Length: 588
Image 1 (cartoon, rainbow, N blue to C red):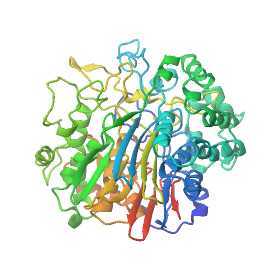
Image 2 (cartoon, rainbow, N blue to C red):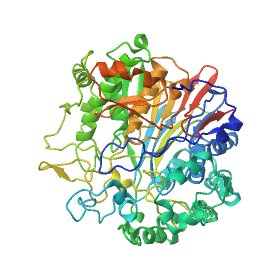
Image 3 (spheres, rainbow, N blue to C red):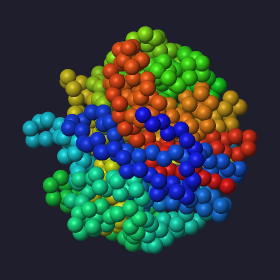
């Protein structure tokens, strides 16, 4: 086993050094816990980054560099995040883009105010609860639900970016879009990771636009280093630069989105121009809670991320993790905490506009401590049952796991101390495998809903309904110290595994005092109320026997996190970017 703990790979060699690794885990045959949202393409050892004035951490060096340039030009954290997102749309198209959705946390340093914005996709007005039930009355196979227009939700990312810029942008809108426009026109070299994912992908080339863009005439993925140009996306961004999000949600771009979704030959969807025109960003109440001397804040429902992370941390707070350190004993408690958190998540969490979510009760400290009392130090509980949190409404609900897949994360702190933590997604790798004439891929976010509307005669909270936002596990996070000062900006992609990835990083930073790069690199581990999952090829694999002795059913998996972490220090900033993807943390 090789544990990647080194820190010496030079930044300029980062992309070239990515190893093309393990095979794609395949599509789930039925809705459940997907082990690998995006395939592993190797790992790269990286050094912790340092900066004095500002820092940006993102999943690709070109995107992070573009964000740094915006900060150098006097841009705000939001300005940089917008630029990073639009460049990621090009260089990491499998994970996020304007065809998808996002959650954004913004910290205003001068005003000491945290705001969270929900740019999650919505179900079309025509959506019905049986959307993903086949002619035989059974749930569709995941891949059959995903590929085509049926899975596409109304995109929210661009509206979110525009709203954030209206509130906190400093540079002109057109200026923050300019780097992505230039890159789309001039082109960029296909990275090893993008090539590896394209080579494993079996459905994207069935879309004629995507095939022409990503593949050679013989059907092979364009090679590493091939210059990829996207003039259609450049034209889309020029229209948006001139006319704002209105150019996307109405007019020719909107009509093309509708035609692409509804015109799919075998699996058409039902988005309309009215659905697009009616999309709104929602400001949500942040979900904040204490962890030892720290205050942890995140995104509320329809995200389950912050609630589940805080439940896990509240349970772990009953143990002296600093004394335990990383190892099988800590992994036992971490996995059991995950089981309890996911049991509650799967029953109670959904879009709060459609169901009463007992958020306050779920993160109530007394309730969490009562849940911690269910954990045996000697034996795994196997599978946890949902609890009875305070303020739970009298409602009969059935639990639902649901599939959630690939995303990207952006962490930024600007020269004024303002911060953005934004997790952004088109759901599965390459989304619905539909490319618009405007040069961007569309999401398959509606498969984040439960495929079953009810179980045992009880409704599922996360069932499909018109206008509803599907439950998410995205967990953009900000950490504050005992004096209310910003300490860390953290987040990760990874589907429902995001919750464990973020909680692991927080424990590594706050309890084990690791630097951000070491915290990110630490092997992933945990449970989503199923088997205990340990990351192959890391120190976590060494804990397998000890966990099995406690009754854990252990699975060794490729756990392709993409964690971006920035920590504020007296000297400035220290950043870490996940070597499992192509990310970097850079600043001045």
